[in-house]
Amino acid sequence: MPDEPEVHGLLAMMLLLDARREARVRDGDLVLLADQDARCWDRAQIDKGRDVPRTALALHGRGPYVVQAQSRRCTAEEPRDWPQIAALYGELTRLTDSPIVELNRAVAVARTGS
Image (tube, rainbow, N blue to C red):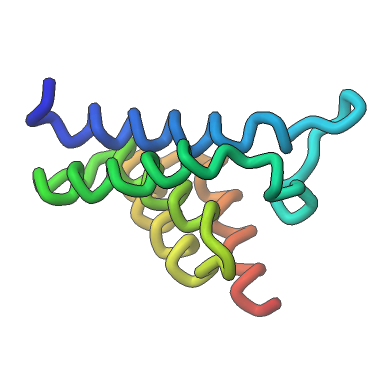
C-alpha cells in the first residue's frame, strides 16, 4: 500500500515509539520522556522514522496516524517544539475526539510555558 499516507504514518509512529523502548523502563518502573536516557534510543530507527512522515505528507495525508507520527517526530528532537506538539495534539483531538489525546494536548500546552 505504498500510496496510502496512513500506512506511512503508522510505520513512522511504530518506528519512533519503538526506538525509545530501551529507555522507557528502568528497574521495572516507567520512565517519563523527560527522564529517559537518550543514549539508549535507537538513533538509526529514529532517523528512519523521521523520514517516513515526509512521504505521508507528500501523499497529502492528514489522518490520525500521520498526525501522531508528526507528534512522535517532534518528541524525538531536542529541543522539543512544545507549541508544535500542542498544535498537533489539537489537530488529533479534532480527528479523534479522544479525552486521552486532549489530556496529552493539555500537557504539551503546559510545557510551552516551561
